[in-house]
Image (cartoon, rainbow, N blue to C red; front, side):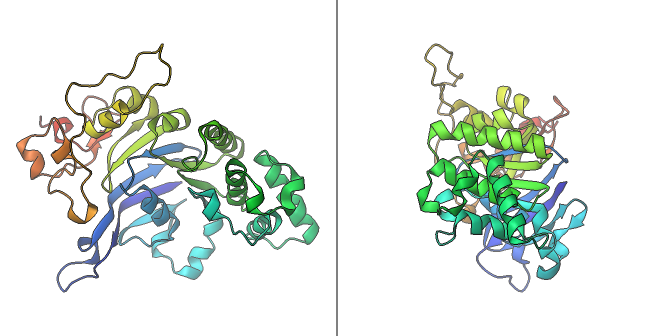
Length: 328
């Protein structure tokens, strides 16, 4: 359903005389390749600033990739002009992070969803109201609220409206960019379970972006871990969560707090899991981007950038780490 081929998104300076644009400026997304099968839910995790949201916007072509290509159901979106791209936009929709900012405060729920319902076909006023009512009921809201405005809803209800708007054009691919991070903990589980149920019932393909590995583990079939614009590990969700290979993935797992005092806390090494701060994408380290913070770094890690390759120990896992590329 979705295929990314060496996608790079670069901001900043324009291309020079000898360097292409992909080699200049800030590499927010730095050579990401990823495939998602129809009906599959893939989780993308990483700390703030690693490029997750930029990758989501690049897939949607809200930001054009600097190099590489994005394929949706066999169509190369990166090769299309704006007019041709517009015909494919109903097939891919996005739920943004902040429900307070993603809804137009001047439009009622009816107006917001009616606009989305008319994307594929022109509908009469009666059919639009029926379609809006169905969309609201699908996300657990009563049809009687369609005359209300965003400021009259709670945060969780607003996000449900945003989900309904994304589903109204009947997309095949849904990208959820940290859809629960701005919500109370008591509401987060409701939205996550809602998305999981909708994907099953509507046969949706979804890329779920979050910085919370425990949420992604609950929802996803596979997990991709991102660091400084690159995917450093990808594999089955349970395997990545319970037996991480890349040192950065281990750091994320060790940072998860278990709220139940009767349960054993995750094992933490005696050393600091990741000393120092995350480097700026504008001044990314040479070699492995994680090597300045890695407790297992070797001399070659500072000069050789590892590629995302199948792990010899586990064939269903791919890891970008020199310690697991068959050379160590």
